[in-house]
Figure (cartoon, one colour):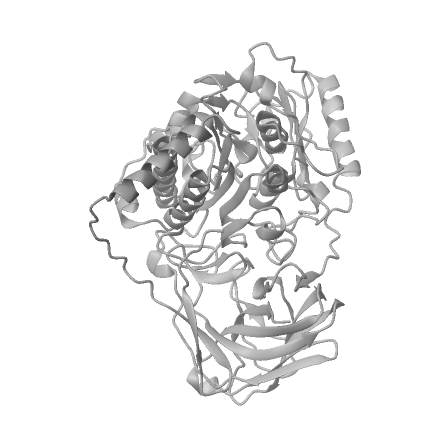
Length: 619
């Protein structure tokens, strides 16, 4: 595992509860060192290992972006921005004309990870537990790990937080990022490193890239093949990006606009494009490292997006955006570069989808797909490596909530039953259902079969949130996943980075439907804020017959953060620098139950603003 700098330290407080404070990141000092014979010898060995690896199993680097539409790349004709590094993947590898993902984030991630439609894996929402993949699903990371690859993920996970839903429980040896659907501040936020909460280092996309590069380099030095997954979280809101990128766009006229220009928020578009150029620079940094390590020829690089654009902006006139099952909501770029085996500039016109990437990568690298569940995806390897591939037509289903749309090579049947001939009408403007009734009948049958055999009951979620596991010490239990009553409210209607506030009465409480995975003693930390005039509440945490009480004696009332970095108004919650106090230790017995946090005494007007409980298994 890569060891990243520690970012917090514990000290004793006057309350008798231990608390954790963020530690400022120190500037790194560098010195000039004259090469020694030993250093030169080590460098020679390193370069020899690079040359040796070029003939070994291919490495894999998968880059996934968040809310970036098909049209947010200069290679696809958008002159509003420049993305030369991403464009180079199309030039030097294969590009797919019609590649489909889901209308929103977590379902696409699940389909990539499992090779199966997201409804099969229990993913029905983007938060509060509905983003989790069922634990009997087998992931692409497990396939590569079992094949001897080092596996690492760096960025937005969005398929479960508590182990074994956590990335470390789904086949990734190394994880650095955040597990929620979105985050409240992209500059040095609190992040997850293999289950521990650490402080990020600068703009998160740059930070994720740094960690991904360090992971790949460590395995190159060990001559071990790697499977590296980099799920960036931009250009998802909040619309934040470092100044140099925003300065390029803040006053820039945009020549290319959405097909209904009156719908477009120009400043939002500018911010999104600035974020896309930052992504491109970070992609360029990773590609340059592959060249430097002399492994580019035998590294498969994949680039795609998780759904359509998150605003009305230029997208080649396609209908729909994020959340829609129309072309504009589900069409994504897909570039696959592998110089050793995929011809440069190859154009693939056959339709494909995120469910295809697992079987494709498994076949290209010679990995055996584990598990007994049948895949919905089809290996695209024949389309990538041959010009005469026997490729029968297929149907790809796009689904979100109660909307189901079906695409074959020529047509799309939308969720309203209208039919569009995409080859001649890519903007979905002319309904040809009356002209092709047999096609309507065929695609309608496919939609009904999907609803009956795949999606029926998929959102009937009775899965508790795990606490503790025999194989893992850490568990985060956030406000995002909580049930609450009385006048307690969320800081925002979007749960992911929210906290709970307006907790004013002892009869009110916060709870979770939970299950303890391993009996033992757990240390519990609380993340909270509370002004001085309200400090002093006594709180009780309970699970079954086990209880833990602590009095809050340390005031902490920081301002909201995030707005200072916003380029446009945000829909998501602002966040705070929450204080961390150690409540104490509690003995938990394996099995299901209700985890409950309540106040026994409230001397002021409120208990606290609550963000998170953090459990560490001690014994």
